[in-house]
Length: 102
Image 1 (spheres, rainbow, N blue to C red):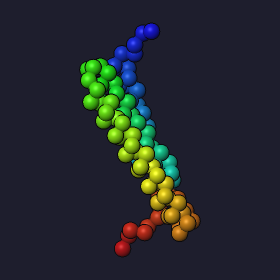
Image 2 (tube, rainbow, N blue to C red; image 1 turned 90 degrees about the vertical axis):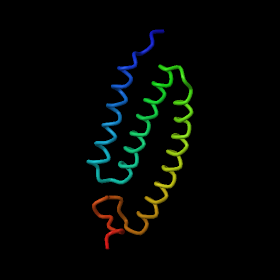
Image 3 (tube, one colour; image 1 turned 180 degrees about the horizontal axis):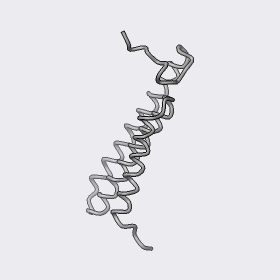
């Protein structure tokens, strides 16, 4: 089996990260924004695992474990907030949500 070179993996991670960033900046549906944030977190996780394997050091993989736990909690809390917001506002469009404006 031929290992994938590190620059190829990092290029892939950068592409995934910028796709997620574009989703956060462009999309108006809050569910798509949350999924884009998760995509960005996964790109960072893949980068940490790549450097951890390349440097033969397990600290990056341990950090990824904690990031995955935090991302799971963030998804659960975010989805709960979106459901509560949808029940009160009847929309998930970020332009229509103005609860925090004074």
